[in-house]
Image 1 (tube, rainbow, N blue to C red):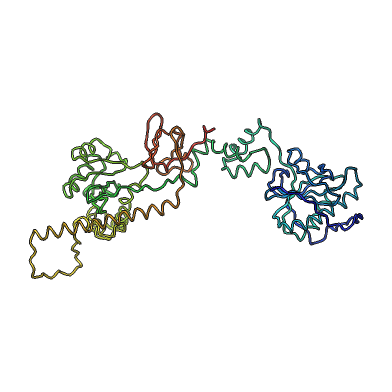
Image 2 (tube, helix red, strand yellow; image 1 turned 135 degrees about the horizontal axis):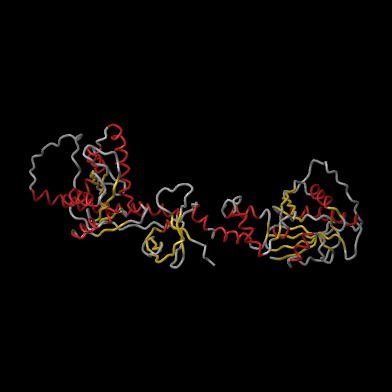
Length: 521
């Protein structure tokens, strides 16, 4: 909306006497000074013009030079013309007509205008008002105007901003040099976008400077490699498939190394049924492919049967030819998680906490920790799991375990035949596993709901470049990212991206990437 009006509270045309302000007067308006020029501020403006609209102060001249000086309605000296565009106002105080006036006359008109301005600021309830510092306005000294504002606007809540116009305008050919000095030099310190811009805007100015700062900092290779982003990429949680029965899908991992026992064991192979959450832990002397494959065969397959799917991380023992050949022999489909993405195998990782807490106590008292692993897993498997609200033992075997603390069961007079026992067991297993699956799906949906509240979706596209977060803990002075790497493929059904790393293609999780703007237009 654009509107103009003239405000005049003078009852007659008699020249009011000039008030000599006592600058020691305590009730004064506090003025805020800035280095900007008037036209740089997105604010309400106070300017001074003649009755024909001719600019008389630096602020009005700045607006005229940029063709944004409004065409005020012609007013008499001492009147205030109001021009509104959107939320911002421009107040023009008329100081004289077309002919030159004496300094006392100019000063009197200036005082009258500021008195009227006071009522306008209260009327429109404006938060701030900017005025350009001008050495002399029609021979009236700046100090006179400054004191007039301090005294007359003392009771007004509006903040008065004095624009000193000290910022240096930088031509196009010098802007890159300034950016490099403020951001990339030793004293610049590679600060972020906000801090770099705040430092620059106190010294320099050019159109779209903040946009140029953002572009420059985003394309700084040193910043992209060295600095961790505070708000990392966080894609929506993808709900994994839920198995229909026990031992259909299992997860495997290696824990350790620990202190060597008398039996020479240093590592633990952990195996978990993805459906029942039943865990098996096997102490092994090392994490070689042969040792791991042999332990998996003897302690899991020979006891619980052959799983259809085995989910593991990208450990060398699971990617080895030995483990791969064993999987092919038993027709097992091997699936690997994304590198440095343990959340994919989250349920098994959580079981490691229970194992670790128990072993911490044991190792302090007894180095023979491998003698206690089975008891740790029995404790875990006979505890109610939060996901499906059953004991893993019950889902795996169809009955609750007999615990040493339980009272001996009284024998009933009814004899149960083998056929009746098998039928009842099958019925019980089918019933509780059906309930467990519903609980698992419900638990995954609940986890996704809370996880997705903090998502920071980034849309990666083929052909773009991205920086890859390095895995593991890095030294504070080392690079945190590698790249930029070209994106070769983006998967629609999972939050993974295939990137090119020195000629080799690698699939990584999207959460480890951040966009590169180095080659962006």
